Image 1 (cartoon, rainbow, N blue to C red):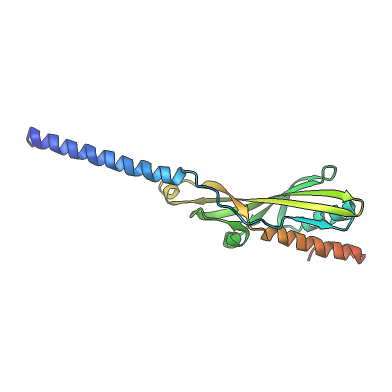
Image 2: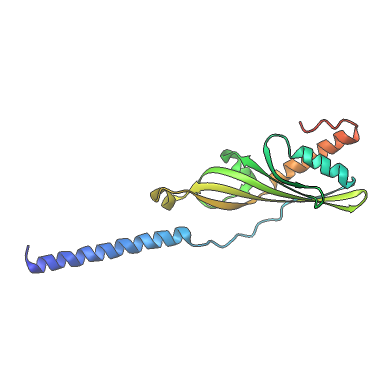
Amino acid sequence: MSHHASACFGTILLRCCVAGAAVLFCAAGMACAPHPSPVRPPIDNMRVFNEPFEKVWSGMLLSVTTGEETLSLVDKSTGIMTFQRVIPVKMLDTYAFDESGMLISSATANVVVRITAENPRRTKILMNTKITATGKDVLDVLLSRQRQIVLDSKGWLEREYFERLVRVLTDIRAGNPSGVQ
């Protein structure tokens, strides 16, 4: 190969490498760049019950100890309980807003419940939920890695727990504190 041909080949090779690196950096930048958070509709995560704090606390504790949950904090003096619940991946769309485009392999709801007595016969419950999902996008597949993302709740999980609590409180009022069906 002549010196001129060798120099041309080297120049072409260098340009291809630079172009390839630019494409990789661009793809990596798009995958890692933060996306603006979309505005979400408000969810129904607060309820007020015309019941004393003790009854609501006991009912909520029964509602979140069905075997699906893992309690991490139960502090009656502050009115706070926190728990996690595994969300089946096929149900993730029901419970969370997910525009990530990732192939999700697992998801867990992280729930913080705050119960406060507004007066001796009126109790408020505020429930905040974030869903942590683990998955991969195209770049993660190429890099053989998984990432965690945090998803906003659609409010269905909160609704399920409020409905459970209503059933438990109805049972307690009827003198049958049997728990949750």
